[in-house]
Image (cartoon, rainbow, N blue to C red; front, side, top):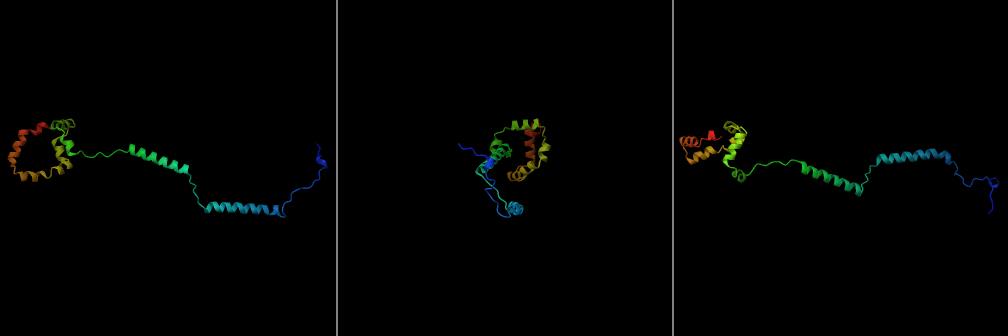
Length: 145
């Protein structure tokens, strides 16, 4: 194998730069940087991937399920069939336990609206006031409540 000595090699540069390259280089670099900045400022792009879409869908589903499970449901009024199964004794016991008087029941606006049509019903039944008072005394409603 032949040895090469570096001192014996010719000192000639194998590559040459184009004429005026280094003089034009700073302005070329600045122009490219300005173009890239201008391009980023004017264009608005959103890159969506299937992973991001799937993750967003899963997160929305989790939030929806949590809302469905934890959101309190509105309690609707009980139907007449359900209330008809409650005995009078249970109602009286409930009223006594909660210390609800007849006066409080009469003052309640919902009760007044419910029984507002009863005067018409009593008139249609042709019931005397005297007979009605006697029936109330016989039942002794004050004592039951």
